[in-house]
Image (cartoon, rainbow, N blue to C red; front, side):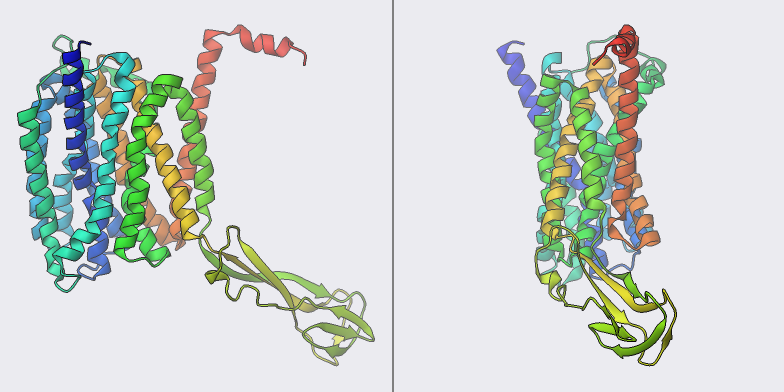
Length: 498
């Protein structure tokens, strides 16, 4: 690339990333706004309805990513991105007039189109960079995911200001209007500052454009993206009510911690692109999926305070109870010592505990004069288990997981120009559709899991299952590719004596 071309490419990448950040901030607005409306009893929505409202914008952004990618390949990124920014501002502004679940949901469907900005920006960015720099370029563009952190971090403060510290709750309606204005300003800047460019391929019919979607590889990449992007989007919104309910934080603190999850994931995506260029996307995905599996397992344990039956004390021979106290039981002169309750967990919630802690003791269930048979229970065992699920440990693990997913998002999209160099918009759009569907489906599934189990931590069960499926599928595919490329290796290994 010449110096001029490189400068132009970097300028387009910057504007693409900036526009994507605006769109992503608007796309995930409901995570903050819906929580505010429910917490302040402006709307009486259930956990399932909250899950739907958080997921609905993501659904629109997912469904229309494929046609957005096709349009970008056909017409170029400048007209498509500019039009998107203007179009999304309309339903976003209309959200300020919503007064029930269905009107809110309808507006959410409309401004959810902002999610298609990813497919547009990916295709528009790649046409400006050579293959050896595309991974890094995609990583930098993907840093626009930090728009989620912008909303979760500053959103609660904006709402406090607009509602006069919650004394005028109807002031929330100004917030979507501000977001709509931001999209319009960005659209004007984008239109005036960018130059259009399309892929260097001849005209193709819709059938030719969609032909790559017959490849199972596209759908496998989509499943990876369902996890690393869809679940990231889900938790960017879901962690806000998670922190307010499980740890009792106010909306501002919950939003701050949720932004701590979102912000590193967006920024580190650029680093993930560089890693994918240097070490290979497949190698990076192995680490990402393995890390997700381990962290999901660690986050699965809920905050709990459990009392259960423990190890009791039984009579070794028949006889008559001659003495009973909290410390021992005597049968015809033979004494059975009991484990006494110490109340060591009395202040456990105020202390710091990394692991679950327990206390065990035994309580007599017999009285003096009772006739006892051999092996009859004399004292019942009691067990008290307390797991703090310390918020700072939880938040640290969640931030680490978000960062791993940021690297994974870049690694998934690094695969696309390697395998489908002339269909990046279409394939990237389809992968984005599947990833976006993850962002739509997961909050709804989280809501149902919460209703069924009563545990907020039940959402991590889904992460555990998804990461295991992705890891197993990828490993099996790589094994088949290795066997096909060098079938003699398996025979050589069998003959090798170690």
